[in-house]
Image (cartoon, rainbow, N blue to C red; front, side, top):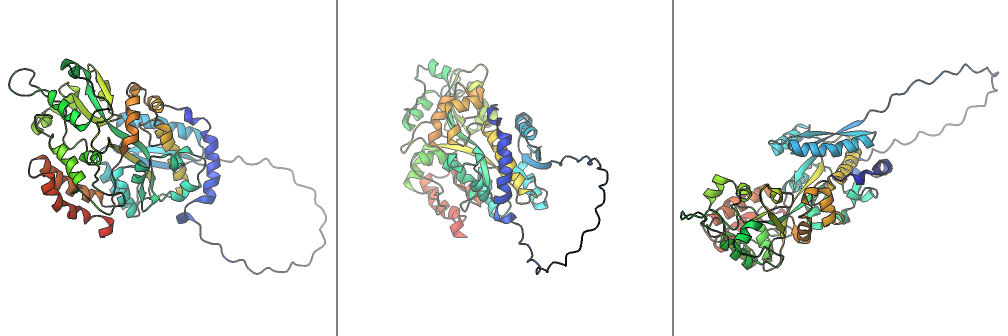
Length: 459
């Protein structure tokens, strides 16, 4: 973990405290004071009494130090991730004297617990939300609007919204207001088993790869290695991951327009991307059948050496599996480019917090810390290969390839009713598509109006 950014942070925090006192959001503005009473004329001046000798000076009573405000944060972090996060919290808590951040990890049933706490008025001041949840919570009034705080903050680097990748920052917005700070932008990259390529006498994947080259390589690397008549090695694998939306983007289409006005899943570009995806999934020509994946495990098959290529997140440990020689490269290009999905999450502030100014201060300090821990930081100034390797030394050999994927990464376009949209998209569209119950061109025209009923313009 890179901790050089902590130098000078205390001085910045003290300055910010003064800024926040005058520039908090409108929702926290104090009520106006009562009008002053009419001024009374002064009483007649009385002659002074005789001067009395001063009493003996008493020593001042000892004052108690001000008690720190506790800022609670809830996350889904497991044991290892929570321990790493605690190092950042310890650094912050040691450097400020007016608040302390207390971590409340909840790795199981996280969103159920968050919703229950919000409903009961016991939510933590800060909590994590992945991209698809923020707009919905914001639309319900559950999150603190931090737009005014950010505009007033000229001190903390993490508050500079111009430094964030726009497609990542938009996941933390609702109706053009900001409700959280993204702390990760994890692009999908292509992991490949060098040994399997070498055994087949094939060139390793490069940035020049297209869909056609990738598809052919996946077929060439699918083999029956033991001669029993059944394939036991496959060139690629997919099961709804990587996201099919990624291939729609690479074909020049989209599933939700940026202005939330339509879900054009029946456009020619969307159909082309979905046809490419459906043409490979579970076919036992490029990828393993669904039953084999269920039996052996999705990522586990790559780690066992049975899959030649795997599209995974930049933070995945697939490039440091013991006994495997794994390379990393940006994903192949489609007809319209190599757009890749970036998973992102944000830290938000509950609207219930009793200390919004302090909660905001804790948020920006914590975000700065996480940006020097998680990769890839969602800020342009921290997305270089050097910054990636410094934040996560175990990714040093892959850092250049990850950085090459960054310019093409984007997140999903999110709706307030995104969970409902996802249910239709996956259950009524992708599932039958993956199981040969209809082509994309056959299914999409009936699905589009159902998806568009959930858009804000339909409400």
